[in-house]
Length: 413
Image 1: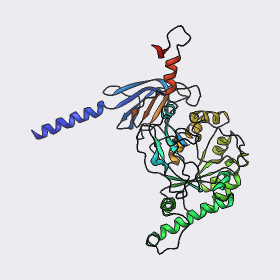
Image 2: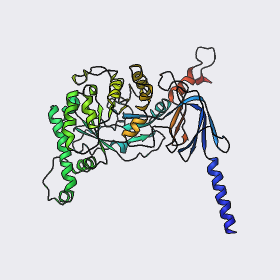
Image 3: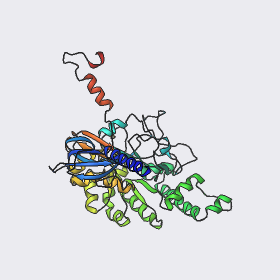
Image 4: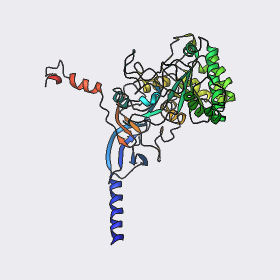
């Protein structure tokens, strides 16, 4: 009797699990006409191809084009709601006590009003970037999901600002800013070797606080990446040369003149995060900024990813940036990789960035070329769950689209 009951329970459980599977059917890869389906179970892609549509929840993709969810590799989404000195900014610490130790990820707001707009653009993940505070080290960052998960994972990177911006926190000297960066890493190395002595008070005083050293120790031991915001070609070379003595994971960010020093970047195997739309010489650090830089980096064999950076002017332009890069010579697939696969690899999220069996079921379906500015998402799936894409713009369109056509406006119905 017990065995029969156990068998019955196992059978019911199997049927329930199978019934809970989700299949997204009638979708295509861009540039191909053959349709296929994706079966999802427990948040994971378990099958791709011509599938039986029985015993599963089926969503028709309408013949749209499927891409992995887009990853914005540098934004203040969720830690900045409205700028200009309001009380909704948490991306920056202006005190004296913390630099590397500052962790704005703790203030992440999953319910940000900007989230629906990003989702509508196919963005499913964002790497949080702290703003510059009062030290060369600005704080920590982490990859967050737009699934609505309220508590993000732990920080995985430390940010440092050099160049024209970083010099402001080092006596207005670029050299001093780099020296401050090197000192932090040197003291962190010492802290790792002699932490017990430091905590017992038998080690000499160090320039960096205990809170900063704990975090920088994670950089030294490879648990966190060091993201260095720097633009000028000569400074990029200096940074890479000076940091050779440290066995750490470095990522260049900004890097408007990286195309001038590709050999140094390739030799150090350093990935680059850039704003593909930023080609204006807004400072002497950016005189070499150009729209075809992604193509030049790709030809040099450098791994790169795109960021929007400015929460207000560029937030919805991630796919547009990739499309512009294509128009300036970057192959279409490489442009897509710059907002999907490449950032997943750079940020250590191997389950994201591609649509394969065994990978996380996070993807978007589009009604046209996914890198074309006029295309729209028709479906968004994150962690195997269908996401509501309704945003404020959609609601405003519904409210006012009948105005002037002789019918009563939506608001008065």
